[in-house]
Amino acid sequence: MASPKSRISRARRDMRRAHNAIKKQSLSRCSNCGALTRPHCLCLSCGWYKGRQVVLSQE
Image (cartoon, rainbow, N blue to C red; front, side):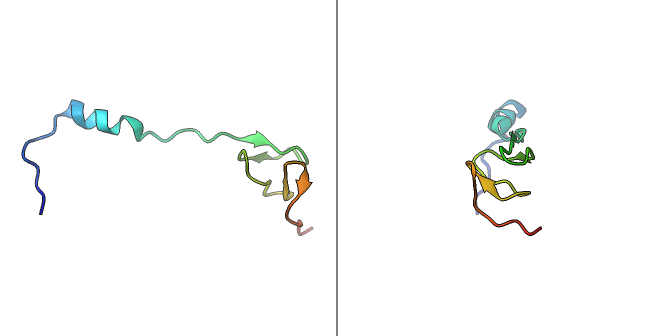
């Protein structure tokens, strides 16, 4: 089993964790209904993507 040869300093530990921060999710407006959606994904409220209906909405 692997075990560390020497203690890792706080600076080295924090440098390794520098890219682990959670980034804010970007949102865009749906061109059909105006709801907030993730970019490059279909709208979950109306089922439209890139100006055409992809999924039939259950209304």
